[in-house]
Image 1 (tube, rainbow, N blue to C red):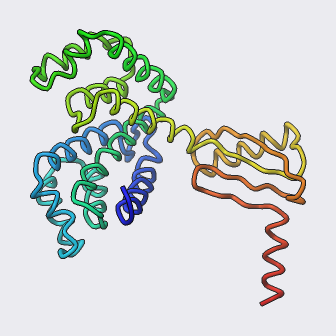
Image 2: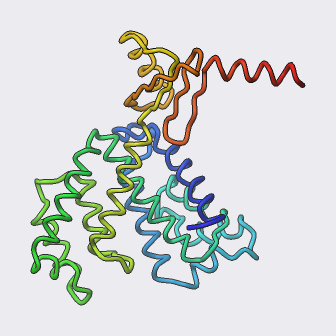
Length: 278
């Protein structure tokens, strides 16, 4: 994706993250990230099946609200959850460089939602390991690879084969994504789809790795306090990596994914100088 599509997808990802922030355990009022992923995959399938629909939902000559109403007409009325519909309408209101990008966006959001569900369940590492092993198993067995990737093959038979391979041996998230990769390849090789899903899992993990830069080494106590504060700020367990940069003078600068938390003394001095100069 390029241009407006990239920006629109980034905004949709932020909305998805916010919607599923309290989704661990799918408690009262929470969004079930796994179920949301299934719904977004269903929207992807509908878009893949209709070039006319893709064009209608990305037509720059049609107002964003009109595109959102069209999506509600198609998927509202209980066909998908309120959370899925809200996110879908936001996607429809956004600008897309090509009509195909909107289907790609829904797929990316669906995968991200399943990954979030795995993370909420404490199974993100298992998901990565199981998808990797599934890909290796398939690639290492010629007959199995043919059975799962034959375009003329029966979908029900493929689904049953996946169940035989993974039932009782993998998490629900792994089974969901393996089925999606096999049953809805979207023109990609199976290995390419699995690599795409693994990249989404890695991105989720990296999203909560904090890279802190400090002027002097932190004591164990201060390290723990900073990690706890970041975990509270992002409502998620954060892995903390610390680098020392004497030029920072004092304070700490932290990067967590695309977010920057800058509390360095150097930044405060620079801001004071700008105010004086102004």
